[in-house]
Image 1 (cartoon, rainbow, N blue to C red):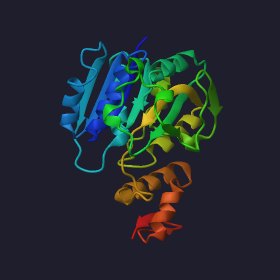
Image 2 (image 1 turned 180 degrees about the horizontal axis):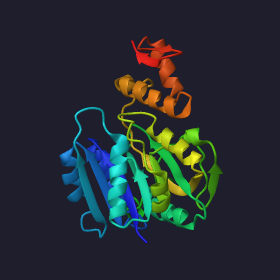
Image 3 (image 1 turned 90 degrees about the vertical axis):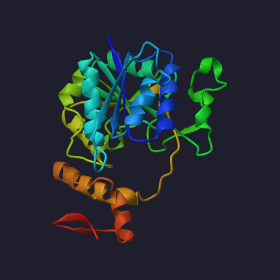
Length: 285
């Protein structure tokens, strides 16, 4: 039985290093660690020379060329394919900003392998404050392990937070996200991965959730598979991703018949950056 952790990256090298430090300090290492870099060769060099070097974890890297919006969906699919080709039967997707708790890999692996139904397994993501010194995250922690009790991270208020050792089944598919989740190889192959029509930021993970629901795949929130989201600057309205969001929202609407990311879409309209036409949909002004 083989577990792979998959992450995609473009920049954010300190975050990537902290993720790898978290994996190295885990109660059990993943068998395979896959990093797919979107136009960032340095991230791959840092991975091969980083905290997981010599750990016994097999490191696989792949460089994807990009000259436009980041191919997030395609990069995650490429990572999954690399893991499957290497023999993984459990896939854990972890955003580059996320540091795993000591129990994340083992908890996800146990949850996936114990499941008697097809499911996407989602752990709790806790958000670290902007002033938390993540550059020395593991220093001073017992055994250099990272546990929820050791870090001041608050979970997302809109998502379930089951206790360690418990899980919550849900059909609230709009809450699915790709920051941290796990799936069996068989379920992933039946699902077909992320839709690569989505390019850049927005909606590709919501689309995957609804595609899973349509195929009768369950959504399970898993206690104990905590990840800690490292701070990076954000804006209430992601203007830098305006064109990606408008394009991806249109793709999603054609698939599912309703609009995702409505808060952002309406925010763009109120800011005078986008307009809505009942026949043509959303477009930039």
